[in-house]
Length: 420
Image (cartoon, rainbow, N blue to C red; front, side, top):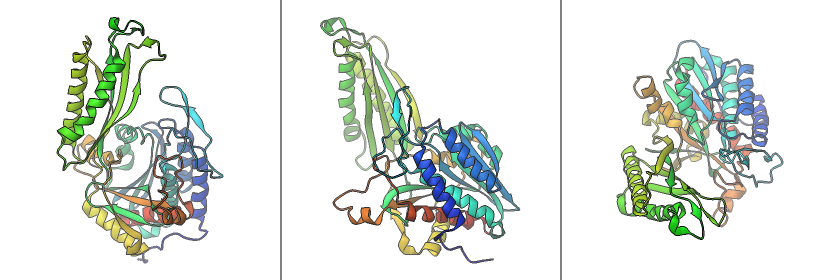
């Protein structure tokens, strides 16, 4: 058996092609559920590398399978979708794309969360692994997941029979970009990301003329009271030792100032590190909304709809230790950092615990690490000018350092579980 491969550097074919793929992806982002072009380009790359490819899995999901004798099944996953954000990076390949958003209104589109980088890294790793089959045995499953930003894609792919295509994985691997020095990786201990529940609340009042408010039940006033009262849920109903976030991100009501609308719609998200805590906070939100409506004389129950949810991202400790050791051996311990748990959320855990439950199996181990994307200049100025974080219109990974690191990280993680 050969020694572990060195991290990618220089003008290797896989790196050059992955860089070109990244630039193409970044310049042509697509919103969640509309990733047809992105999926097509990714599927084409997998076919050229020798994978058996399935498309339109749970939406625009792409699955590539490469069988190489007896051994474990390792699934590597990256995301296809972008965000409704107007890019302000001034890059020569910056996105100028616009598309119809969820409400039908045209919105700008940008890869502001690094999914283009993740997908380019995965494509590069898939190419490297396919070209070096003497080094490993087993089955590689490469997954391009749609609709991660809306937390719908993983569940849809599993429901569409993902594991019927790949076989039940022995481990599922993923990485995510983050605003720390490019060329570094980071691992969490315990939960890496929170679980979440997003709600849409519709308050059903009685509309009318702005000059005769006494003849109406104003949903705007009720919604305002709800938003203010919700601020007390975390501060007064949650143990201070727990980490919980409740954020009202949208409030829509009416079209003009001289008409009291018939309804108001509130959009909010809840984040926590325990499913029981999420349940308690959802119950508190429901109680407050109904009480405010009742106090205002509303004669119809508010509509409270769960828009999306995701479990806590808790990677498997044993499988993570295997990958971290492989990364430290190749990159050196100085390039591997520890990562605190974050209130961000992901549907990736569904491929593990939740995904296995769908098929009646026991837990599938997952491994999830962070990929640094900040340029040396950005990091040197971070004390005075914060590094643009994910979802920022100025988010711009340092591709020359982050891309080869990400390709190598995925390759090494797969080999750590597939080596003969």
